[in-house]
Length: 88
Image (tube, rainbow, N blue to C red):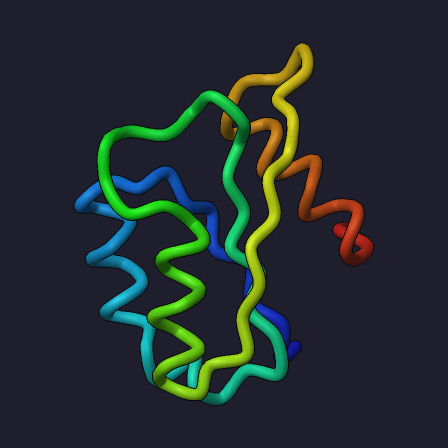
């Protein structure tokens, strides 16, 4: 298994809960990229705020915002993932 983690972030309670439950995995990663789709967030912590919390816990993280384009929000996240590694 790789050691890079991509978090699809929209600021929701559900996303925050998923991140909290994954802390052990995140602590053992070499890089965490918190990705948001422009215009597809809900009221809640921003990706930058999440990254600040991760960095305070010694989790190597950075935030990135991507454009949706013609894709669905989920499709935009998958398209982004395909740019990072080959998906068979």
